[in-house]
Length: 111
Length: 115
Image 1 (cartoon, one colour):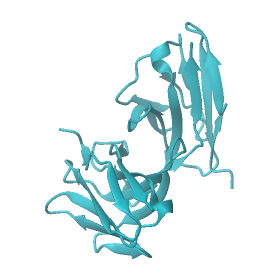
Image 2: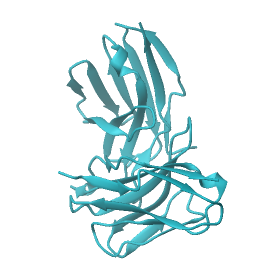
Image 3: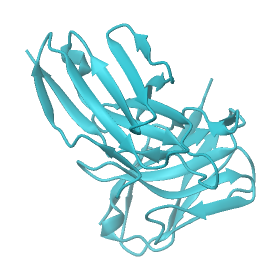
Image 4: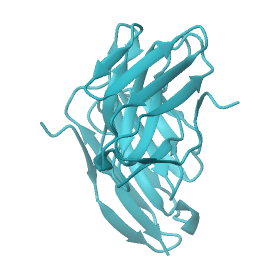
């Protein structure tokens, strides 16, 4: 089993739709979680950190469920400019010493 | 702020040639790492370092060497380039806070083609 797994995608949604991505992680001792956005052939960029209580940034909401070991990203009122690949990232604890990236979920917002 | 700087941005190599991809960060981050990304694929970790003088292998280390003589620099060496190493390479850095890593900052990538 991969340490971090994401919805395979691709997700094709119309403008204005709400879309949600999930990401599961296997290390129960993981401490920090992030969502990144990657545009085609560009470097990944931080979209938002994920806090235990959940957090919101405009149209984006991130949730963490430690009991079930998953994080989620909800995008409301999708825009064409939201089309990208979304990566979840898990920060280790204990003996693990590397950031672990999911393979990404591709989103295309259609006009 | 420069952040993470990768050079070169583009490179074409012939099979068997060697080269070094440069990565430098000016944020005093302990953690630095190299990833490769093939078309339509996710990031795969090649090597990483948690501080000067300390390096470790990631998921796909074969054919690559790294060293970390300073906090700022983390070069990636291709020993004998092969067409299978054609990819986009990203360098990233992060720092520890409260016992866990903060978000990673990425360089702009190096697009390498081996012919």
